[in-house]
Length: 284
Image 1 (tube, rainbow, N blue to C red):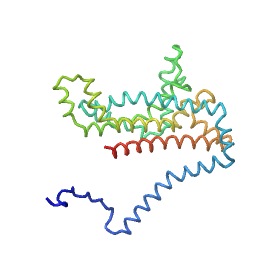
Image 2 (image 1 turned 30 degrees about the vertical axis):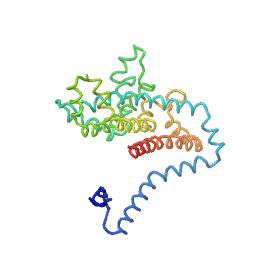
Image 3 (image 1 turned 45 degrees about the vertical axis):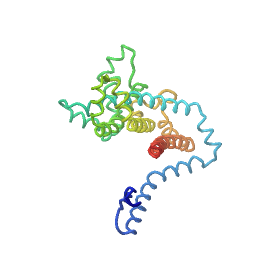
Image 4 (image 1 turned 135 degrees about the vertical axis):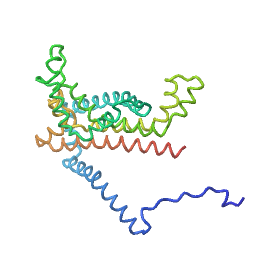
């Protein structure tokens, strides 16, 4: 066997077009498009935040109202992630493994948060849980308050983040198949052992991406939580609602600084997750 026969064939890189200048133009268009939509706003946030120097940023972000708004945002995001991590995994599992009446309808309804305005979501929650809503009078004697309170904000965030975990896991489960699970079952593994040792390791990166996107989306929610929460300073004001109030009060440094922190954190979550996955793939 010759040396050339012993080496595996080199995988050809697919080209966008056979003409080199056409390929360069397409790449340039893609780079300009992404730069304008992503890097442009980030650069504008940096410029606005540092307009009066780092000291102004520190002073704006150290105010008690700002810190409480960020803490509330993080707490709501963590709770929403925990709920979707469990229930979203269950929903994806059921949709891939079972067929049942109404499956197509529910599958379509799961994408409603992509189509419905968050402001409409907040208004619908007001119609349900407001003082004159359907469930509001029933919950009032129990001392349960949903509208203009944190529970309503949690419900709104749960709604707008619903599809991310499910849509990340369904394709992974479909590609994974059931052969390995069936093989584990034949040697006596129970359902929990199969899921923990066989299924979940295969779902790991889909699960991580789902958690990352859900958390990033929860951090940036504005319209729904504004309508259902009211944006009461110190009580129902999240980081995005603080940015809105700061702009209304012409506190531009505070608004730019808070928006910059949220943007960098969300972008770091997504890029960091992608970087860790690529490093792991290179090691393997």
